Length: 218
Image (cartoon, rainbow, N blue to C red; front, top):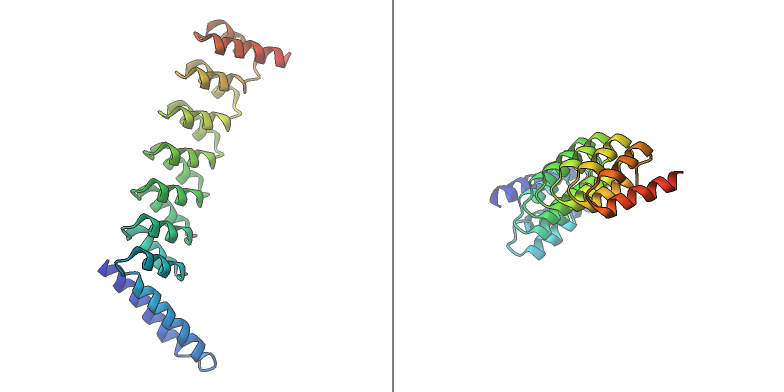
C-alpha cells in the first residue's frame, strides 16, 4: 500500500507542477490539483469507503489500474475497473483477480477475441466463463468450448452461438448431457445427420427431437 501511495503522490506532484505554468487559470488549476492530491492521498486510507470515494474522483488510468490490481477490497477494485478503458489492463485483471465479480466486470468491458477465448477456456468460475463465451463470435473457439467445458451451461451457451453444421452434429452425437444433444439437434439442418441421431441416440428425448426437427425441415 505504501508503494501505491508513493506512486499516486508522484502523479499529484506532476499535476501541481503542470498547473503552475498557467497564470490565467492558475487558481482553478491549483484548486483542481489540490483536490486531486487529496483524493490520491485518500487511496492509502485504511477505510475502504474513503478509498472508494477517492477512486470515484480519479481519472488517471495508470493510477486506477494500480488500484484495481492491488487494493485489498474487491469493491474498491471493482470501482476502479469500472473506470478503466485500457484493454491490456482489463485483460490482466480479468485473468488474475481473485474475486470472480471483479473478473466478470473486467470481462464485460473486453472486446478482444483472443483474450475472451483464453478466459472462457481457463477461468475457474463458470459464470465468468459464460460471460466470456457470450462475447465470443469466433466459431472455432466456440466449437472447442462447446465440446470441452466441464459445465453444461457453458457448453449450451457456446452451442447456442454456433451455426456450423458439422460441429453441431458432432456435439449432438457425443455430448454426455442429453439436454445439450437435444439443443444441438434443434440447430441441425442436415437431414442425414438427423436421421442417424434419430436411429442411434440412447436417449428417447433426443431421438424424438431429431424426428421433430426432420419433420420441421420437410
